[in-house]
Image (tube, rainbow, N blue to C red; front, top):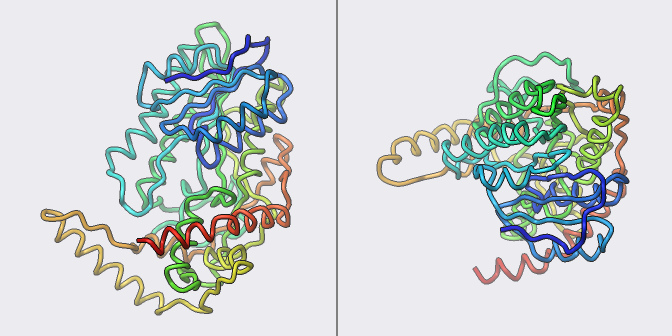
Length: 383
């Protein structure tokens, strides 16, 4: 299904954002429209279309830029052929995020890896010159041992592979993208590719934050502590991640900078303070009256043992029922490993400076949470 605003496109760049109706995709689309002076059309490709978002965009865009909404899947060749026709730059944010085991291994591979491969192949056929892949810090780790990283960068050596299949599929898709850099297109030009690795992304409309908020409401306005205070991470605001995509797209068009950014990956961070996942939740939800325990509910070793028993139950029950444990040993490791990075390389190579300060990011996140908390209480009370 294709819906397009009624206007003749001007001469200029055409951007395709996959996952354009998603948490990050929406922010990228908004910033592209605000900041890109050479833009003639933005295409949103997504399996789910949020009509209210599309209508607000159309009201904002007016007749300046053509807005095309495509309902479809990255595994559909026909949809991709139409979506990529005449496109200057693809920003590929669409993926399945799953670290709990709700989604089958086959589907994770099909969407995250094969979908990316199919999209890259289509881009080559359609002479799409620029391709940006939204990767994740989780392609690095933590590893099974929970080895920490403090202010790591693109040159940090880290041994061991991520345990989650999600992380491995993101890494495979990232590598597919980067190896296509310099690929010769049918029109004789060369493709420029790049990957961005944001930290845990927070901000308005984050479904993960809604999940944590719901758990806090169910628990009498007490948030779950799933990570130790010393397990520092550095979350990044969604607006700053979107801004990094806009800036690297701009750099790719620069004759000098494209030689620098082409084929590279970059960690994306901002000035959000380093704290554990649980303490971050408390930081943004405490203004709404939520509290969090000072310590884990049980010693870490006992948490691992409990998770091991649950994992064994899952294996034993597999022939009979589909049982998904609430936690796993690797999830406990991820939540309790110090894992922080810097984005100095992004600053040096394509002038990335966070667009939103921590104060602004926190204020906007808290305001959004305040606007939904009563609705969440009402929904949960009816269950």
